[in-house]
Length: 351
Ligand code: NAD
Ligand code: DAU
Image 1 (tube, rainbow, N blue to C red):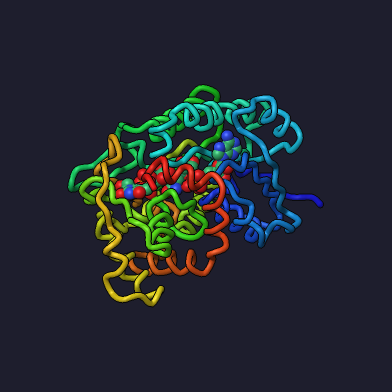
Image 2: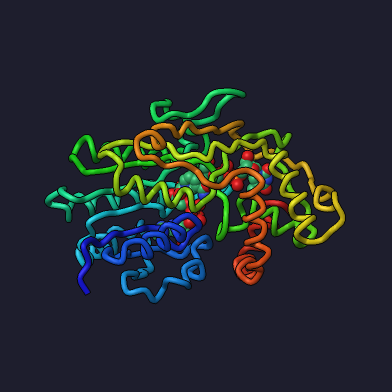
């Protein structure tokens, strides 16, 4: 079969990557989509079982930190574009083990940049897209928003590793002319997220009537974006974003953690047919995350005005859709919480 383009998506077996792979495989039968993933604890091919036999989809298991492997992959596939999502993504894990974040998020990104630079002798029609986070901008006070020109001020090993990779991607653009684009997005939620992150963890715990560990005073604020809205934005930016630019992506959907958790508890009581207030009784305030960023909020007006993107799912509707997905995919949830999960959970939260 011949294709118009071959696109490498890294981290396509993870949470956001799997939604992006599905979207692009279905939308572009004329593109060959190659999903490269190491299948760490966060990668799960079950997320892609519905498209795994499509003719325009291939999966390759491998590590972006392995320079030789990346070089050979580029030689074999002659990619026209790269959409790079593979990363260590959980802040709490970065506090315990920064080095794996340095390796994957920084060294892995440089390996991909070097391979693109080596094999793209002609930059025409090529694009290297780095998917990044709003956490690179640091922490906001009660008011204000991150814009694309906000100075970087990363404060955790995770956000520092992402900031570093953003800088390197921009450096390859300025120094070597590599065609790049970057997006910085807020907290995603929805199907297929590993239950170490707030919402799937709390849904899993409510289901099993286990404590809900709220860090600190619970008044930390995040902007929540429906994961498929993020995938749609990435596709749009990949196709239409301007070379060398950065686009912020956000849901215009700010919640203090404790308000989000209380709303989730109400939805869960209803869906599980339990007496009102039962899930809320599981809320337990625990020791704060070290260096916990107080508030993130995104101004996505550049993306909205330039490319016409807008979020489609908000507030309680998103929470309900998320809770419903995990409850009706209990096998998925059981599979990902078997094995090493229990060891992580006990280390992080105790029994
Ligand atoms: P995730 O942890 O669910 O998935 C990461 C994927 O990368 C997994 O499939 C994993 O197996 C793979 N991976 C990890 N190390 C690898 C390596 N060395 N080589 C190859 N593959 C490797 O993460 P996610 O939440 O889907 O995030 C995807 C990207 O989006 C990340 O770059 C993250 O920084 C960024 N991001 C995430 C959010 C969010 O809310 N989750 C928000 C903004 C930006
Ligand atoms: O902002 C984008 C970022 O959002 C992404 O770049 C990261 O990859 C992603 O993990 C996410 O980071 P957060 O640290 O904001 O997400 P997390 O789900 O870990 O936590 C959300 C909030 O909930 C945060 O304020 C910490 C709090 N929290 C989290 C957990 C896991 C708790 O109170 N208790 C918990 O057990």
